[in-house]
Image (cartoon, rainbow over all chains, first blue to last red; front, side):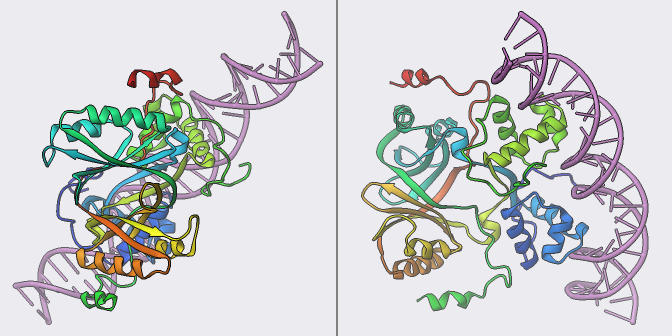
Length: 179
Length: 179
DNA sequence: GATAATCACCGTATTAAATTCTGTATCAAT
DNA sequence: ATTGATACAGAATTTAATACGGTGATTATC
């Protein structure tokens, strides 16, 4: 055990680049991270210790940010999903941004290019709770209301996909046929 | 082992409701699902087998949908995040919706209440790849272009939070002070 | 109100997996 | 060609997951 930096994703520029085998591993672990190293090795064509080494490296490099339980929002009484556009005064990690992220209902905060400044994703128990959250958000100094979209139904919601596992990086001219 | 339905989230209406201890467990596992049952038990005040039983139940009930590796989008060359509004002809699981979800770059598809029909979340390598993806999406029969927002920077991105662990369910009148 | 049944839990025992260690083939650089 | 580094396999060891049996508390039933 060299440095024991496991678990804390260092901000190194990703130890080394992710090869085809790594992508296969990521593909398996995104789908189910409870598999044993024996089975993981089987699926990607490695021995258990080799698979283990790869995973450790992927963790250390930050390619695997975390291994987490994915919770059903309904189970924790947050069935209502909404996207909210808001205007803020400044850019960067401003105090109002910190205030917004304090709310546990807020899952994502993005700065978008377009007519509004921020796009945030929130989950609440119902429309009443959403209204309450929004009113609290808009009470934050420097935050201005714009628009919000309530999600009626979700058809797809999946994690980041590792992508093509056979060959990588894809040759640059692969983008050509799209035009 | 009664039914051996582990891993496949049955569509039962959540075995039984999630209590305070369950929420503590979810809180730990969302943060790091690689902890041993011994440590999980320690953190929530249970013996390892008891913690194990709880987790098994949470899995079976569907409260824990999955245990997954969270990948850094940059590591798999998808640093560019965008939200795309599109109009589709019909509602429900239409063929155009299925076609859209085929693309590995598409992570979420939501039907929203508002001036557009669908809101999708996509990740690509760069703006060129995004343009290619959009053109392919808009080529899908029944799909009409509307707007897309490119994310400049992301300030928060976290999984569904289990919420308050001390007392649950929260009394209904708790929503009152918000008004 | 007593009794049976169920449930959630703990402690222990067993089994399985994670992890370590050692040796080897492959590739890159000198 | 030689050295060094890397990734790997197989065996050995340590650690954790899982199964088992028993206990107290709560709830349903008579």
